[in-house]
Image (cartoon, rainbow, N blue to C red):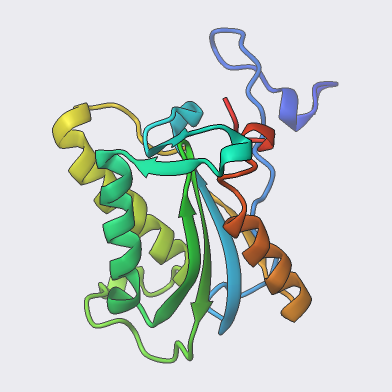
Amino acid sequence: MSSESVSDIKNDNDEKLCKRKPTRLKGYDYSTPGAYFITVCTHNRKCLLSKIVGAIHESPENKLTQFGQIVKDIIEYLPQRFNIEINKYVIMPNHIHFIIVIKNYTQRAIHESPLQYHRSVISKVVGYLKMNASRQMHSTLAETKIWQRSFHDHIIRGEKDYRKIWEYIDTNVIKWEKDCFYT
């Protein structure tokens, strides 16, 4: 190979293409029962889902947009669709955080295609959320990209980790202006 690294390969337009880092823990089965912290961002972090109103010292309110309400309805439906629990979630202006608890996942979900069986439960849940929210949002937003590619996950390792993430989600609205996703 030349002196260029894989992450610096150029396309036909002479633009550098960045190699994406793997986002999943290598060798881990994301269908394993347990708790997972998931973050899904909107495309280019566009604030589509809610609006934070009120000053920080006044306990701001997180008002969902019509698109945020679509996402809320889908999140609340996920446990019926998959063998999971959603223990906590927050829909922020340009991202969503939630804790998924996978129960014993030895059987496929009722509505699941046999072709999708090889995908992890986490990927199926996030894919379902993104696909169905996009489908409903496109009636208003036409062909606008809604979601950033992929998602962030964290395998929750124990009660202390769980409580820290729960607190983070619970206080995300009041810390919005200090959030790394704040625009």
